Image (cartoon, rainbow, N blue to C red; front, side, top):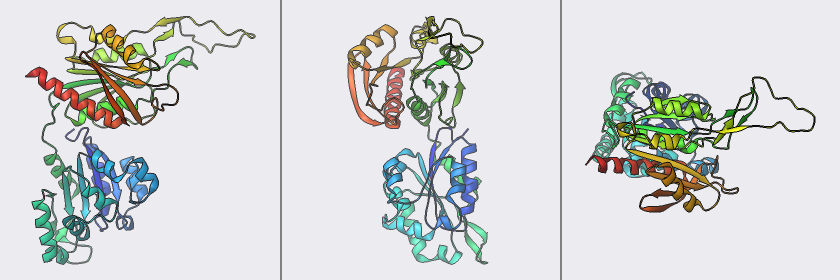
Length: 404
């Protein structure tokens, strides 16, 4: 898929062509893009947040001073998380505000706060399009590096004929693809990532597990894909939606996860963020284990395969060039993680403190220590998506240096 792993922020302006934005969302997602939308007040006169949200499968943002949305995402983070911003329809008003650097609503603020490519799909009455002010704004925006697709010539909703019709969704998609075709630093590489917990069944009803949400591993897989890596995500049971544009292998147990990882080789980098259960029942009961008086049943546990050590210990070309493990600790984090890196044979190890009260396991933030042969590097608490982006960038730098 041409847009595999790409994040598009779609700003829907207030014009009759806003209805085309719904089809545009569908076309972008067909090609592997993840779409998040800002719906302007004018846009809500033509399409609803419900219809946009149903298609993006994400929150629809609209108000700059919405305390809930601003706290959860924020206009800066909206623009930062995107690989590309598409404004469709781009009204004369939006174009004028962009040219003048005006930021008086969420859409224009996000546009002013971004350093990512921006694509406009203008849509307006022919006389508005031909007006000297609009043409002056267009020239200024293009000089600023803004990309433009359309408008097309044809009949308009107002009954006039001429240039001003918004480009068709597939034309906009083609323009998006042409903009993001620059290969990322991990283009041509294969990545393997594990995420989430494993569930080790005791009987048809019960299982051993942990509180891992899978958020960090999912974020890492998406970050590697955004940098161009062909990424396979091996996911234990989570409540997360499958990231677009990745190969997803769903598993339940540690043994299944190891088999899936081995099937995904060879890979240039393997990152094991999953919280794999250390033990499983020696024998799974075929029927529900019943109470017997007041005595608890005796459970015999056996050790699960060590996925990180197994892959890190492979010989020759079967071993990924870079193997990264994770360590969830509750005490002596750096000391325990340093010993674990040596014991497992991995190149890097990302350690975090998941003690009660940190909110890290299952939360949206993380605070980690990167353990390498050179020592420990502390990364301050931040969003798990930011940790993922930083780690993916370091992976790209390392692999490039190894190939030089």
